[in-house]
Image (cartoon, rainbow, N blue to C red):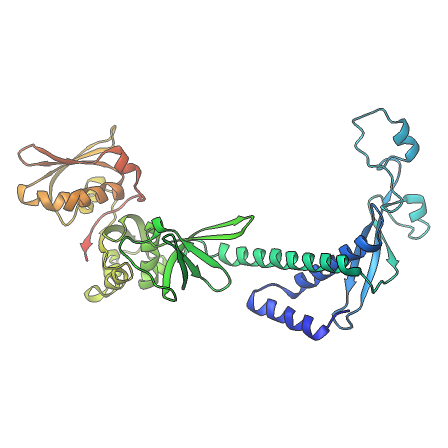
Length: 391
């Protein structure tokens, strides 16, 4: 019935290329054969199992019966007389159950709910419908096994950077071939201004792995703040080892970002670790992000200093904190006003996102020249930060 060379070849291919264990496919074949057998020759209520031998290609079929007694099933006379609608015991079916007194004639130590196995006559002719059923079950089981394998593999990589090839572009969304699965880079998760071509290699953050009726959904992002921190983790061994910790990231993808870092060891400079000699590390990350400017800031528990450094490259004269309103009033000299605010208010906006504080900037004359509101703060992805270098 089966070409063993073909079957073993397929099993090897599925195991090596798709990561589906050989045992899972054999289980699928056995389940399919049992389904086909029952459809063609079985009776209502029967439990049929198959055992497929990969060495000979032969298949043995078995009927399973569950050991029962009056406490676990209702006999026919009980079912006819029963008036208690709360009785959830199933009706005794001789094709599905075997009474314990009969079972003990075959196996003395048998217990209620044990299974007894009875061999069935082998059948070679399953018919066209049964064969189609077997094929469908096998395909379904292979898909389920492959789905489980993909979820297991990519679930462990969620939150990490993955690389792949642009497969196609539909309505602005990129479909990326990741090898054993396809990831989706939605339009709103792309870096503004970047253009992609089919066949181009691309790196992105795998930030969501979901199962759906239509398959596995791998959502990618190049605009997510964590993409920036993971890139630095790849470039800076101090970050990868945990000596330098990323405390927060505020990002406007494709334009400018601020990243706050701290060191767990006094002799390690956290900012220098990310910038690298002659700025080589930060330059590499900037190139990956299409020239996005990156400010590296040293985090501090001192909130005033932390806010001062977050506003770099501007020099701050004075910081006043309103703890109740979680608001910082910043005083700067006139020649530092434009730096503190930034083009289109970007610098103060990113500082607010990074620190989590509402920020009002005033000139030394007392004029209120810029402020951030709670809506802006609500977009923050940061938890804390400080010192900075502009790349």
